[in-house]
Image (tube, rainbow, N blue to C red):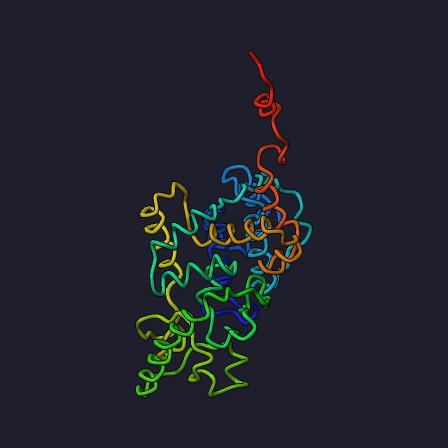
Length: 316
């Protein structure tokens, strides 16, 4: 399926396709055009009762179906409210201690160390990390420019001063790749969003627009067959984090999201206010950020057990 003009993220396209496929399979592969809003409601209820999906997942499935009927079938569905809404509570995020983060980073080196340090040091999502471009690194003001993050929003996040030199070192192979790629007549430059590509036709072959963490090989872009150097694949990051976690004897399931959770929790521990953390993480609603205050208040919201006071008494 070609990328829809109504969707600006290939990830969103794939996600919507997944839920549309699940919907069709659930209804014995009937064509959606022959199904109604009641069929949508029964599918959403199935997700809540039998698959016990999270609230956000159920909402995403609904958005995919609304998009299908509205944009492709020209049969907008209305009054889709009579379905079982998921009640699964959100889990408290897994967080590493500062010592565990230190031990984890000790197991990494080079580009892998820099990627993990950026996720933890700047609170980046995995996709935001691999989509970082050279121009998005502002060493002068110690900040990163995150473009088209979740919800297609832009934001500025902090950059640890300790990472400036490693980032400069990382830019060297990016420059070497670009020089090599430009010698190939088939090279079409790095991928740029359509509007930017039209506005800046030469930008795709400029260093500033190259990915900070490029793939080691060139590949043909799906749909255009243009030869490009994409960014590293996102699944590779969690693989080396899991390996480093084992080497550091950390008994937790660690991925990029855990380092991001740790960034937020440690910021709050250091005295940062909740609104600042919200802006750094790129949360649209502060309620999403407040989950980290629950992490800090583990143990019934930080209430000390009366048993602890017995240690102060001289009991014979």
